[in-house]
Amino acid sequence: MLKQPLAAVTAGTVFTVEWSDTLANDWQTTGVSESILSDNGTVQQVKATLPAGSAGHRFVHLKVTAPP
Image (cartoon, rainbow, N blue to C red; front, side, top):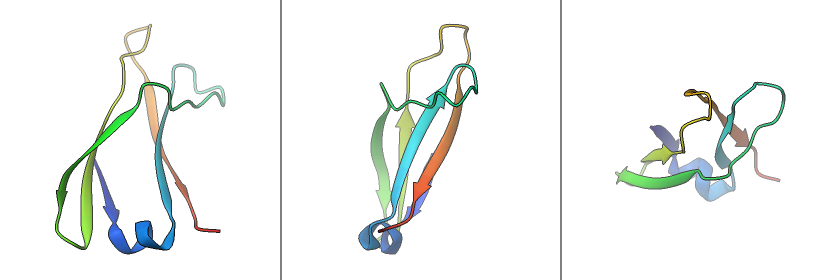
């Protein structure tokens, strides 16, 4: 689960869940789905779901991109 401050989202910050099966700089977003679990007006709690890796595991990271 991811907690993202709404002020950052409103300012244009982008939170992206990415995955890789190899950690070889091949991060992808294919198959990632997100749903907002809660929103208290200050912070959103977001659940990201992705398919299992072909080897039975998958590496996941959160990419945060600052607003332009």
